[in-house]
Length: 219
Ligand SMILES: Cc1cc2nc3c(=O)[nH]c(=O)nc-3n(C[C@H](O)[C@H](O)[C@H](O)COP(=O)(O)O)c2cc1C
Image (cartoon, rainbow, N blue to C red; front, side, top):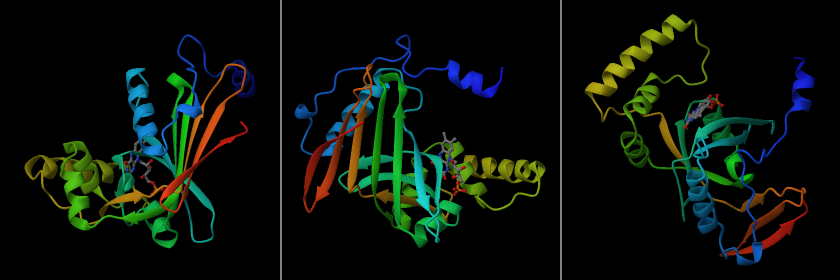
């Protein structure tokens, strides 16, 4: 089938797989974090595949945007956290422009969450502890390193990756100095609840000093 024909044949929020729940913004908490934790737990309970993956948008030195998927490592009063190599493309972009946006999409519930704000890198010890609390595969991938550099061949990757897996299995505390935990401290968090008749509810939290302003947005 032609791509455009295929695109036109697709719908979002098929009632067979998506449950659109009512969302009353008046009942929403004063801060975004408890609502995020609640929506996250509901996404897991609804069987959402990989709800802990998110789009991470950064911009380069010229202000040109970039985006890729990463794992969410945590969300608390210090911010939303993720980890990567400091020398990767995104790491270099964050060094030049320490601001980012995160996007979560949970189709099982027709929900989207957007988070924007400044990003800081955690101290090396904390970054290593975060890595070593994760799986052997995560450590092996981090040990492989050279993220975003040009790769000569898949054979080269296979060789380095096999070495990294062997080391990760033998040395679960192997340090990866370039591996860095980052925290995005939110200035804005938007919750989007899809609605069948397109009366989507958008609730935006905006930081105002130590408080949060809440406002509805036109969908
Ligand atoms: C589901 C999924 C999860 C990922 N999680 C991470 C992650 O937590 N950290 C990371 O550095 N890359 C992760 N990646 C790979 C990134 O999307 C990206 O390819 C890589 O980080 C290089 O991005 P960059 O060149 O913009 O720096 C993930 C990819 C996918 C598809």
